Image: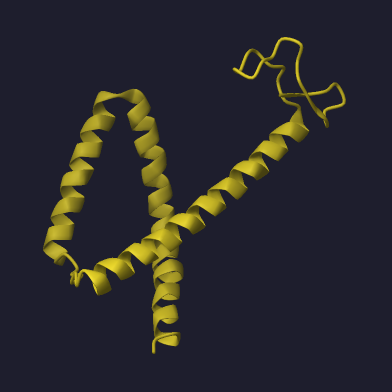
Length: 132
């Protein structure tokens, strides 16, 4: 499906088919619609997976009597160190991987502060406020 000359109504291109034959490029309005639809689909998926994970955890703990335990800090630190070494080795080998790694690492450095005061603090307050 493509956009008509006015850029607002979806129409079939004479060269298109249901199998995905060539289509005319979308205009800005179409791109905005796609961006909004993508965001909505992401939000729906995140909500579904969050609910599914919550239900699965409840089943594991209550029905199967699984005891949840946190890995010791030393294990987590070692996992982090080894993970960083592997990712750095891949980044050293491949220029695209280096570009992705550098962008990720820069964002991580910026985001970690917010995560600690925003996400972690929010989660702690929720557990304290709504605990029974």
